[in-house]
Image (cartoon, rainbow, N blue to C red; front, side, top):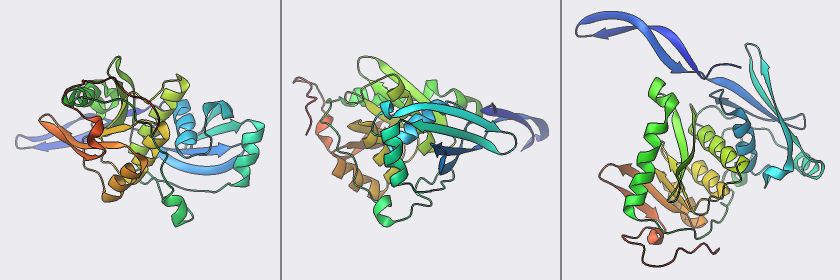
Amino acid sequence: MARPVVHVCRTTWRDSGEMRSERAIPEETAVAFTFNTASYAVMMATPQDLEDFALGFSLTEGIVSSADAIESVEIVENDDVGIELRVWLKAPHAAEFLGRRRKIAGPTGCGLCGIESLTEAMRPPTKVHRGSVFTPDQIMTAIDSVFPSQVLNHETRAVHAAGFWEPARGLVALREDVGRHNALDKLAGALARNSTSSIQGIVVLTSRVSVEMVQKSAAIGSPVIVAVSAPTALAVRMADAAGMTLVAIARKDGFEVFTHPHRIKQSLTRPQDSAPQ
């Protein structure tokens, strides 16, 4: 399997002069998704946590509604071409998928490329549950927990991360990738593989929040998303429609809440409510 990090020669210019050395950079590989032999998508991704990627992509793209619909996943590496993720759906789910099959192609950083209609691009988000109420300190703790765990980014300074944090357990899972959508898909797969409920926790992103990041987070089921960068206007509208609390521009001195601020309280004075809206 291709390595997620490659060391390459580089020449560095500084005030002191020229210096030759090596630098660690992330690998970027074409990853093709097929479902019961039917081609579906090609994404540029970091060749790591690929089973999580296959499962998470299947869930966040609405191909399946549960991990139970997947029979198996095969990872097939093609020399000098890329990696094929062969997802085998169980019989009834395979028939449903083939009935609404479509092809898309999405390069890094573009989760909507190749979608065939405006309706598909603007699909209504999944409604999230009420979930927990969090203090500002907990929001800051969640965002601070991500950075020490970004192993690939510490080495390369060139990948995004998506993490899931809970008050009782801290950082439950984290995934990294050159594509921010891919990192979130891998996180979704990791949570599903471990049967982790997302209702009581927070999705944390090191990237900006675009509409598809909100759609994917809503599909995961987390009622709160926290990001270090700003959201787009469409992402704010989508989060509002999903009932999701969107926190962004999270820095050491604070953060900004764009939608459903009722989940952020200075102190937790009442029992946490996880009943659906």
